[in-house]
Length: 56
Image (tube, rainbow, N blue to C red; front, top):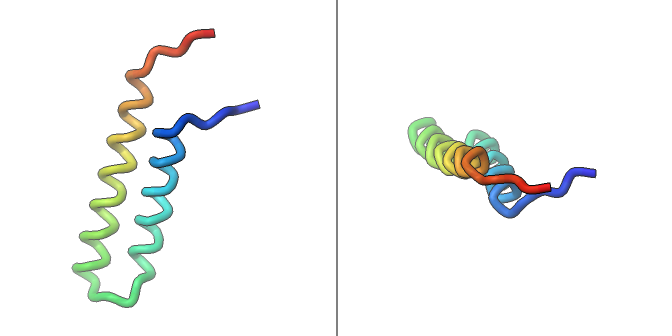
């Protein structure tokens, strides 16, 4: 059984926000800017996960 930690859940949420940004009713430049911002946050959260020490 896999238990998701909070940073993994937040990273997934930001990835979903990024995909939603691509489908928004906005100009291409706005959609791309929002997508890139959300993906940057998701990648940062995922990078933090890799630095965590796992016990057990």
